[in-house]
Image (tube, rainbow, N blue to C red):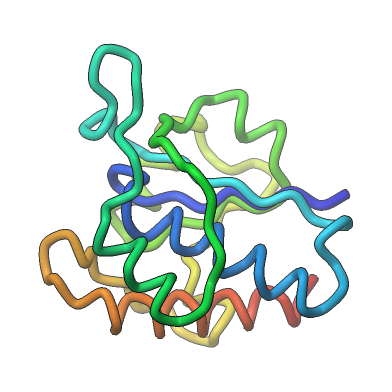
Length: 152
């Protein structure tokens, strides 16, 4: 079974959106039982007293608007052990990528990526927590996830 971990700053907007979009795409492709998908944060900003915050309501609304099912989600922090557990560690932007690389102690197995690499681009997916453009984030994340699905 292949394992994918999506990463963003706080694990309340982009990475959980990617997690649930990817789960839906895998289900539609009949591959849901072949791939494990999760998400995590590269900072502890959304984890208070050891408890992660839930997914941003705006991200939940965007998923619902686009017919993507989602379940209860709480932010969690990327760990060094995640590098050994997952086949793909996928960041949303360059800052997340650098933080991921630092937390994991490098990438000797070449399994760290930016999501839009799977769509033929090295562009960042801007954080909608700051831009408030959840529609654009959804579209870009979906494009990256479709490209990733094609490579699995």
